[in-house]
Structure formats: structure tokens, C-alpha cells
Length: 158
Image: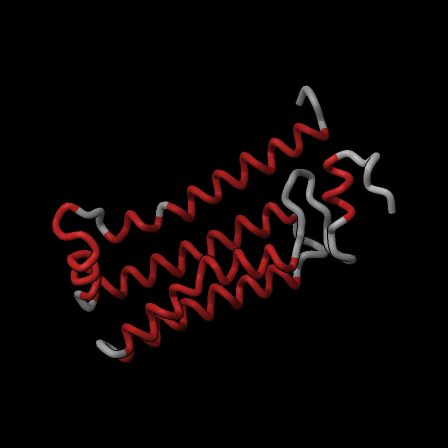
């Protein structure tokens, strides 16, 4: 198919996998992007959980459980791509990552490891560990703005 005469939106829609619901904006279902986003936002949980097991087995297993839960949700969202808009799917994926990270930080605070991590990371002037949750809602906001711009590209004046 000749893509030279297609609009940017038409080019994006041409890349939507068969059986996936196309998005109204820029965001579209894409296996490589989905796996990259899912693992990229959660792999640190697996590493943190494995390291934490050397200090406290139960908490370490809980953190690995957070990794597994977030990825199970990501898998279910991907499986639902025929019924789910891609923007909603990626927002829910970010929310799952945020919840998993929040539970992880709560567990680290509970065993006193959070303060030790912060002392190693930057001493007394560093941000509290909770501040490191900010990228999740920040990414959700950025994705909403980017997807909205794609909708405006399709629907000028709206």
C-alpha cells in the first residue's frame, strides 16, 4: 500500500494490529510499544524485590508479587485491545504501575529499608521516596495531552 498520500493519522491506523480497536488520537495499539512500556515501567520492581529478599524474604516476595500483578494487569489489558481504546489501556497500565510502586514503597518503609535507600542515594537533602512516584502521573498527563493533540489533528476546531 502506497503511504505517500496518506495523512499522519491514516499512516498510524495502517499500523494497528488486526483485531485491535483503533484509537481516536495518536496512541494506537502496538505490541513492541506495549511490551516496552509494560516491562520498562515494572522491571525495577522485580530487581528491587530480589534484592529486598536478602533483607526480608516476605517483603521481597511481596515486591515481586507487585511486579507480577502489574504485568498480569498489563497482559489482560493487551488481551482486551479489541474492546479497549488504546489511550484508556495505556492509562490503566500506568495506574497499575503506580499502584505497584506505591505498595512497594510502603513495604520498604515498613521494614526501614526506604530510609537506608535514601541515605545511600543522596543523604539528607534528597527527596522522600514517595516523590519517585511522580513519573507515573506525569506520564499519564503527557500521554493524555499527546493523544488529545492527535484527536485535534483529526477534528480541527474542536
